[in-house]
Image (cartoon, rainbow, N blue to C red):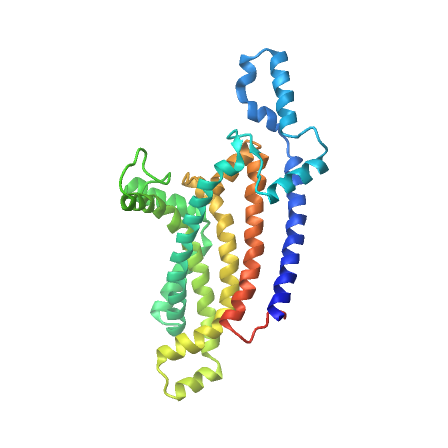
Length: 330
């Protein structure tokens, strides 16, 4: 019953925060300068008579519901969004739901690969450096990780593009697949992985640096505790002491920073997708802002809001998995 009550409370909290943020986002974007109708119609005015263009403008204005008060526009927008209707894209001249599928898949794919790389490297590396504290290996990794999370991601991206796409042309620097590519499913997978290599590496570097250092710090604190000394005194194997006793007790703070990093990773991919012309949500968001395509922009923003809110709940549930002593209702 405790977990049920907790989940109900968290659901109410998520719904409340979601609506507050949706109101703020909607009115902020609606207050931005620019005319979405003129953006949508483009240069058609040059080939039309002024009266015909004004008639077309007025019809489009009404179709987009811009003649209604902002409060009414908000309720129409949020009602449609909750039923799966994300509006009409003035940039793509199609419903948002028709253009969002492929970019969302590309973003999820890029972020999922980056997360796998980060956790596969940073957790074992953090444990290894903690066990070898103040050794040559530990000091070397500390220098590398400081550089990794200190450099801005776009600087790392430019350096890797110069090194591995210009000087040594190993990887492509844009797109998901080669132009005109045709082949089997496995060949398509290899081509996509080849295009994903550089952006995934760039997105992984800062995560590896920060999470490695965090795992190292938590493991060092745990390895100093008395119960670890007792476990070693009982003659338990060192691997058992480190991976069963020490690492599990270091997991709670690691879960906190890892969850926060995962949520931030999706937001950070906006820059990387723009640098590498990766056709994902980030690039779509930037293009939507430039074109005043508010339906696209608001849909993207609310996706990130839901991701952040869900991340907090997942983090709390993960606490109870790594340490049963933690009670959700507390």
